[in-house]
Every structure is written in structure tokens, then in C-alpha cells.
Image 1 (tube, rainbow, N blue to C red):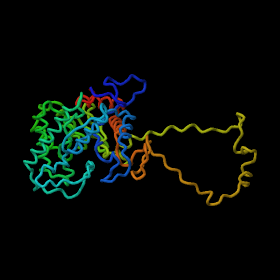
Image 2: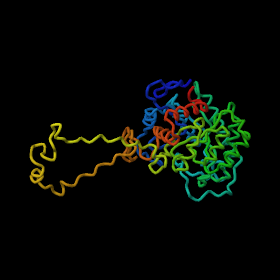
Image 3: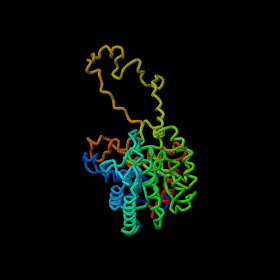
Image 4: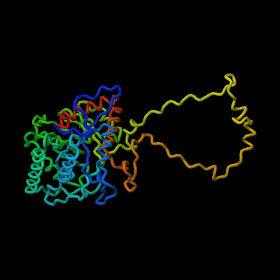
Length: 419
């Protein structure tokens, strides 16, 4: 059993309160990114506020966080963080497709100063396809990854914080990081490793603009119905078509949704079709925040409250008629004449700051103006998972309770985070 800590909750059904309290598991959060330590591209912009990030997540009911391991550095850092928050933080380990150039003969890996790659496509020049996989380097990488996984699974007292293999897969939207040829090689090599682990780990998968190749390789390794896949898998941060999503569900895979899943009306139509028994929730922070420009944003806006009825003046009920006298007994025409004229400076009023259409729980500031307790503008956090849940509920026309409980059941069925 994992150590029970502040912010973790019992494994049974939620308390039978009259008002439902949402509970979330963020299946994909890049807490190993230096941004959550206040570091941006190698420069310390503000103090390390990781503990505040975890605290805000707990405050909204996000009791379990699974940190994404996308290369050796982030996978190891994720394990270190998980040991700081036992029972709350868990991890994955794998090589992201955008980090897979380490498998090539050129090893032309883009230096990101430890940061994870943004989730948006990039139109930059793709890497040439004439780069070849390096057989010896591949063997070394897979051996190192196997050792990392086996040590993480065996060195922990009680349940291991390592709960999945990944993030790995294919990403043809960002070929400037790694070519198709090397991505396919990396994906196949890691699938072989995942298949050989005893017992297998659940898979944390990535697929962007590569559906046919992605499904084809999964079937090649795990069988036409993925019958050799023992522990299940999620395709996280899904942005594909409805047809692609239905094929993934038919194969028994789960679908992860975050801010990138709500950008367009087409995206939202796909989310509407995700079966509740195949749904998982995530933020993919510090990226993939829900923005006002997204189609799904409208589901966060509360309908305006009905205005209170205006008070009426009547002489019949004994109240004074404001058309006849002012509060000090002077007729309004005379009172208006007696008022001094205001200068231009007096007449100009400072414009009122417009209230946000979606209320903010916490103050949000730019990183250069960081203050303790504030969120950083543009840095998505796991506490924002409540917005993901609310949007999914709005799109599907169901309650937030139905969304949260379905996602919780699905996640704990696949990932051992509730033991």
C-alpha cells in the first residue's frame, strides 16, 4: 500500500454528502519540467513552487497525479518527485517520439534545456528522412530503459510509483524533432521492451497525425485485437478524428482528453462520442491549457444570474415620489441647478477592470511578477483539470459527477494508483 498523505483519499466510493465533491486523477502532467521549479530556458525566473502546484491540485480534488516521463532525464526526475509525495504522485518512463532522435546515427537531438516539447504543431523544416537507426545505440538505450524500469519497480517499499510505460508512440505533426523513420524505429523497439516486461506495465501512448502507422505497429506487436496487451493502455492528449477514436476504443484502448481536445468544433464533436467507460482526464501541463479561443471554453461560462426586480416608487404605499423631491426635500430641477459644474478631470473616471467571464480561483501573474500563492500565466497546472472535467461534462450533456467517477474508475482499473 502507498503511504497515505495529505490530499489522498480512501479507495472506496466518495463520501455520501448531499453535494458531490469532484475527484480527479491527472493521468498526464509534466511536473518534471523545470518550469515547475521556476526555471525557464535555463534561467531561474522565480522560486521553486512545485509544492504549491501540488497543493492547488489537491484543493480542487485532484488527489492523484501521474507525471509523464518523456526521456531519461524527465523519467528519473519524475521518480524523485514521486518519492516526495507518496500516495499522491506517480510516474511513467519512456522515450517520447519527439525525443527519439537519440536512436539515430546522427543523434541530432534538439536541446530543450530539460523542458518538454509544446503540444502545438510546428511548421519548421522536418528532419531529413535519410537518417538511419543506430543498432548499437538502440540496444544501449533499450537496456538502459529496462534497467531504469526494473530498478524503479523493485527499489520501492510497498507499491512502486512507476505505474506505466511511456510516453511513447508517433508524432508526425512535429517532424522537426525527429523523422518518421526514426520515430517508427523507436516506437517498435519500445513496444518490444514493453511486451517483454514481466509483468507488463500499462502503456501511456502518444499518437499525432500518425493513426494508421500507430495502430499498425500496435497490432504487429500485440496481435490484431491487442490480445497480448495485458494491462491496458491510454492514448493521451487525443486530437484525432471520430473514426480514429472509435477504432482505438474498439481495440480496448482508453482516450485521454485535455485542453488540446477542445480547440475546434470538430474536436468537441469527437469528445462527445467518447464512451464514458473509455474516458480519462489530464492537463498535460505546463502545456495544453484551455484558452478563450477554444470551442470548449463556452462550457466554462456560467449563465448570467437573473437580475433582481427593480424597486418601484409609489405614492399609494406612502413612499416619496422621486420625481417630486430629492432626499433633502429640494425639487430635482433646483437641486440640479445648485450643483457645481465638474471639471474635465473630475468627470473622467478610471475605467473599471473587466471581470473575467470564467472566474479564477487563484491570482494569475506573469512569471516576471511571480508572488507566492499565485499561478503563472501560460503555465498550465493540474488544478486546471476541473476545467477539463467541466468541459467534457458540458459537451456530453452529463453531470460532472458522471464524468469524474467514470474517469476515476477507468484510470484506477488500468494504472495501480489506488492501491
